[in-house]
Image (cartoon, rainbow over all chains, first blue to last red; front, side):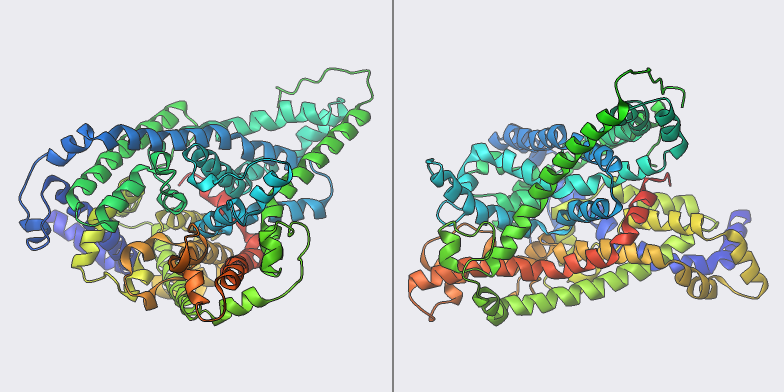
Length: 305
Length: 308
């Protein structure tokens, strides 16, 4: 009775807040929690006529099938390497950009620069992929015209599997590096100006100020973002990889998200098998992010939740 | 900070700083060139003559300027209809997202029984999802497949944006304001509409851009959930036009479009320039939104870094 009474009193007092929360709770329920209920399809053999609940149980069959299949190693290494190399090449750019921007003289030029480097972030993956296809086209693209002008042979970049990762990561850096520098820029503007003035008085050069003031202040954010990124090494940037996928580069561009879409929905049919693959990676991602967050908390800096 | 140890140097420090500034200037010139040149290239190609583009002559200024590409885009019925669809999805979806997010964020910024559980309910979805296939099957069963409703209500609440907004409200609007309003007889509803919304201009602008851009640029949802061409969002159609390999003959959507107009060679030329024009037209809304709202960004993004 006591509990019911307490609930009753809480509802009476806070019901308006619950009403304000209701639409968000309902939408998250429909698009996030109902699918979690649907995960059981990974342990069943989906048949359209019988629906999710009526299809027969098969236990871990789909998981073992996946682990034993030719695609297991290929998908896992493709996904991991694309993320890992992307982190390796892409991570330093925003930091360097923020530091150099912070040292820039001239307010107007600084503003113009900021506006420009954030801009690509707002373009859609279709536009990015479209630009790659257009510029790199062997018959009409500018890049191959330039190669020809210098006496080279035109290359069909989008069909070459060896070019896929460079193009993917390169365009990712082009699009996101500027935008990702915002956090570092904000951290740098929060530094007490007195430090710089004191350093100037002591005769420090700009370079010395970067080494002794800027970088120590950025270290906590750098560490946190680095660890967080490590928690996302098996996630898929499905849109872009799918958009850039061609018959030629498929041995490299086939990452988990794209494969699940292709086999589960595009060709149709393999619902249970692809749901199992999805669950497999989601669980790995979940465990990594929890571990990573735990490490963050232990380090005493910041945690995500 | 005591880590700053500066050694006395006999060399003139201004000279060193001048060198630094010059090097820094050169680096930024190169960076800006790398960032802006591809965009410039698309822009000049979209108003150039197709022959010049294919010949590689368009790399600095438009060559033989013409608007034939843009004319073709605006006459392309499929593209224009999907463009209007996307405007509808974006405006309706963003409005819904912003209002739902603001309401929930306000509630989460106040104390109430069960607040921890509700917060966890939202946060959990950031780390674990059902995955594409279970979500697809569920939406199928709910009858949302191939509906315009789905295009508006799916991904409506971004938990990340929700947390940013909650932090904004609880840090920038003092609690005393609520107490004062409560004495005057305000309840949560009137307080939310009369006080919170008018004071949240910055965060609403940030939400509009984040939600709006995400919706406008979303390609995958249309690909997975929409079957009928007339409901397609623009990104899907744009992809058909620009982001596929040129194939011979009728497989190229652009070539089809110019079907009766002229010879195959002529069609190929028109198709080439139209691709550039389509990219420009499709990007104008987001770039416009970005330029118009950019002064709010640093604030909005920085809020996200605060611990929730």
